[in-house]
Image: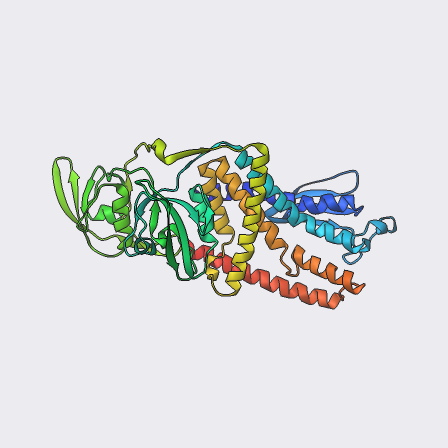
Length: 452
């Protein structure tokens, strides 16, 4: 995917979230009688601007990484006498708190709305059936078998892979026992198995399923090479389009996934393989190149792709899920609430050192994921947008000066003490807040660059 398409997708995702956040401040301020001077989407030079009858200037600025609403305020400049009753600083404490809180809260409400739209759509998902258990992993030790269907994680029912993914990520950074309830492929009573966690997902970002040691079921692909990257490891070592892989590292290869697992697991290690090319069976030695994936883990890579094939999902692996409007709304509230809790819990674990700061992501990763979800379809894009909306709402409510949550702390103290926090203390807090946010942003961007 081109950089242009990733940036465009990021703007499409972030633009409405920023606009609705600032609209929350704007709308409540107007209801409270505060004069709004500027409503801006983006920072920097404005390339489009106009005014309404009440004198508010609306503008679109060049850097679409945020926005702001500027009120008439005696602390920021001279206010005409006729506008003094409408100045932000002259409003009661509760009114100011409502105006500041409106931005993050409308982001959370918007996430509920987006999830409601998603749940209203009839969806067809794959049943959470395990397709492969990797040897010498927690899943293999616990006795999980290919074909088992996961029905609950830590006693909480799950119906699809997304639900399992969220349940596993909720255990990020933890050690101890993870309980899975499984329905055996051969039928019979469900069984519970315990897997041992040791700072689960506490290092760099990895795939939760792979860390436990299993891979979701997917339609088998014939192990036939469909494309070979010029000058890639596979091309240099004799692999060609149309080759069918028969054996790799002494293991009979039945599906493309079999071959991929062996190659991924052995970067920079020589592999003996057999391929069928036309009527001939050839023996080749290949050494996968070692390349870091998005999570910073070195994987083997040959620079080849599977032949294009039609994927067939048998009815036994599919399930249709329908929700009415009321049920969908309840699920939307539930999912938003769960994400709020997960975000706060993850921050707490990061402060305790249970989760690595390498998990922080910045604008580059956001743009990359936005581009990927846009390519997957509108539902995936809306889902990512809802996730970001929750993140924006929660982050802005943190009690850090310069963020909305920091202002709420100052106003709460003012309400308790009966007088505003001194300007000196507020400016000190602003400096600390800016240093904290800039440090986090630089760390997030560094993580983004290290994943490229």
